[in-house]
Length: 612
Image (cartoon, rainbow, N blue to C red; front, side):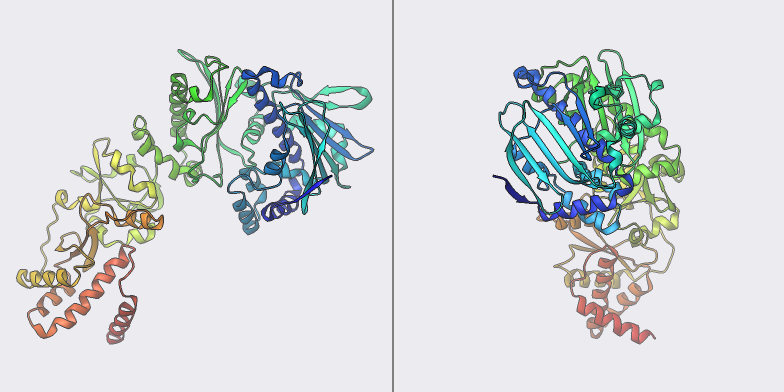
């Protein structure tokens, strides 16, 4: 008896988007089904290395395409690993891939389903673009029971026990009335050669009484000479391994020779995947040994900060029967990683020569690449040199550390930076006033990783990397302007220290401010206010909150006036009121919340009214 199971709500929404949004590109359904069949053969081929008996019924791996014009059906078959009942439910009936719900939301919001679908690993569902019904008969290798899965792609699916002579999967598409082209053998050949020629298993087209025809070249693309491979073939292989629909931003095909030999075919996408920042996201490289797929879960094959790179690495120097656990700690894997990373970074360096082109990469993956400054000790300076930052020097373009150094003032020995939530807000931060007046450039850093990488890169090409809070000692600020009386100023800062003792650890004067009366900062070496906010946002421990310092500009007319007013005790209430507003002003400039919004709004309105 058939067991009926409803799709999860998100699956139904996703199917609706896939069917209605990818119509103009519907031929890609065949590429997706062939790609899945190839993966199934890869998995069984790997399992057979340690358990030869599990594939004894398979024979030579192949993918078979069977059109039936009379019935208007198309069958895609493979003799790979197959599926059992749980696999069918988990892979085809529920959103098993974390983040696919985000695909539904994003595609609904902006209509870019064609670009998004591949990023979310839902390629199988493309079959419903051309089929009113899909029927799957499958049997998992090593198990006796086969299963049938049937769905119209609307509400749910049915599962029943079935018969299949051997392991593998048959996907039968009952084509829509307007999809009869997909039983035309001429058209099928064209699609297979366009999208799937690189598949290393034979793709066999069943011609009925005329026999069978192998359509693809069935050779691993990365093993061929670069001169033999067209741009379109590179692109379609990228689509195959990434399940994306975009153009690759970078294609890197190389062969390393020497103590260890290996071939790499690597891609950088032109758009960021949905799960780029998910903690459990691993690298996207497939490892082969002499064209035998080994694993796509060897984390040590590529550092975490390059997790956006897609592709394959194939080496004849690794043992076929080595376990994944041993591979994780293999010295050969470490050498392959070192060589591969080096080639990637050199290729990125070449691309920096075209600013606009490189910005396509940087806007997608720059925040991730900068993690390498913190994580990759050996390459940290090279990665820093590939990084771009907003700065006070130019509001229209990002800059590099090399460009910053080339513009440094005579005698300047440091690269200065400030961190915050927003570049526009940072440009107006009071802490930058003296830097701007002296013509000293400051980097404006807003990514979370920017709080950490300067800790491990203290110097760059002879220049110290310093937060602007560390600058006062080595900048030699000095001004020849009228300033508040020392005694009155001391009285004012003492009063403010007492008044703000629960919010500010210290009130001190500074030479750094030129326009603002006050600013808020922290003790040198302590956690920045920006980092504190990030930690609070992520509900991290804030027991070690930094000590706030309220810096007072003794040259500002308002501070001079307040200092003078402290001589008369009758002015105390007014001095405290204005001082409170100044602290709130400093907090706002730093992105901090004011302690009493009602007081701030009331007093601000009152002073504005008096002014006009």
